[in-house]
Image (cartoon, rainbow, N blue to C red; front, top):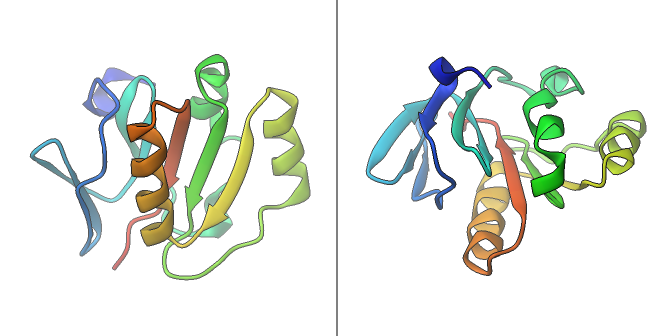
Length: 125
């Protein structure tokens, strides 16, 4: 990812979310985010309809450091399209989608356990 998209150049827990953004490491960020091994980055999608392989390119670029991708889908559940699921599996990344609150919580637990996890989180209103 371009440095302009980076909010923080390290992977940290998500401290809070809501009102269109996220809190982490004493910082606040408006909009959706990617929590990757390379850090916390701004992420363009605002709805599940915008989540595709192109939107997840930064995750795919870090495939060697990520075994599980959690997709936070906003307020509602979302079924990951089969083609996207297989695309991620082809590079060794398992994926699970759930509402953003659950995805952020699960990400924090797995990160604390030292697991190779990433999260793509849609902002909540």
